[in-house]
Image (cartoon, rainbow, N blue to C red):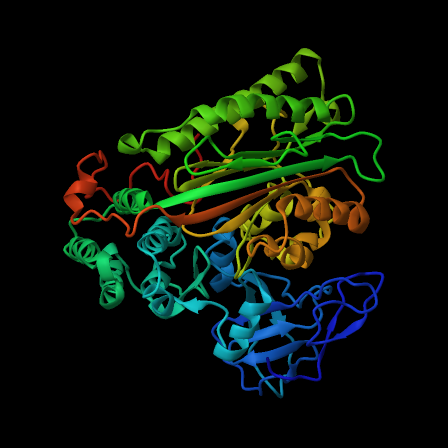
Length: 563
């Protein structure tokens, strides 16, 4: 890593120490140093590596900087320019696109244009070293492609295809046909920026883009070639059909892999509360080991709302209902239907909601006296992890490369961003920005929209589910690498990690109840090679989707709402 005389501001508000850049922990308060690596949108910087820009950002490369003042709100304009609206309106796709961060404030004599910055997640120290060497936040797709497993390649293609409809709605589909914008962060397919469409873009253009992957696709080449041919010839124009084909291919590729799980939960009232409205599953303090295909890995965290007489009742009832129904959803391998699984999860969440809502109505509870709960839930079926959330409890994914918040809070701040009214870093400062827009049990289920997404298990990783007693004040961003990532290398037991996180929640925050679940997934070969169908006929024989319809029911796409 290059030497620089610049320092990083400690994120501890009671400290604020200027920390030498090469340090990882503040010497005064022992808070881990937060280094936010950011991408410059469109503009290439003309500064030396290590140079301080605008009295705030360290230049890493022409398109990467590090924020030296992570505790301070970045410079943001009062209005959102039209060309940046897609970034905001696609906020629900934040796992795959950059999140607008702010602008570099430079004198007019230096630059007459505003330099926009965007963030793409948190990076491990090892990844930070790579970024300084390569000058890129993400590993380029073409570079990652050749050494990836068949399941990983199909996973990235699947994520790519799922972005088509939301990108089409925002007029940025051309971004999906520019392979230079694409990179990989662990299991996630990402773009470093978005291009506004200047002409009509079709799936045929996507097929031509995918042809660039063929020389390094190995065993996957025949299948990918056939997909490209059908896209280019316009015998596939329905994005949903394309997604379904890739899901079938992943189902086959996943047969060569086995997943083992370790799961541990803890909950605590915290130092300032006299009772605990949170609840979790499995029972706190009991390590669960789930080898191979035995059992259904299931983790749930609920944060009750409505005071002692209601919050803990709502969270407890949700846990009881979902821990009973969710494990029974499983599908046989030859009849696998992820839409069915997603719909069943939605139904069971709504049933839990209606039970609590019915109690509220029967007891004539109104306004703030109505009880409810947030929900985050992770359940694995085969190679797929289904992630569900309602409210502002969160799910993160931690790998050896970095950490990614997978959920988008159901609060006013996030809603303002999705509507294109505000920048996220600004919206979370609003006095009412953290107010929930939905929770389990507060209204009838026809007004509830559970957020359900699917994550493909193609490598080792850890899912963190937590209430805001831990996630508030960016504690996960500060401590994930120190307190969670060592589990992956066997340097830390999962039980000790959860205990350490709970201690952090109580000592660094301490304003609320805290509940934490860690679900560690380890992926290992079951056979010597993946099993890949040789042609699309095998994959399409059970599909009922018309490949020539421009849109289907969209259940595979971000923004999907069952109702």
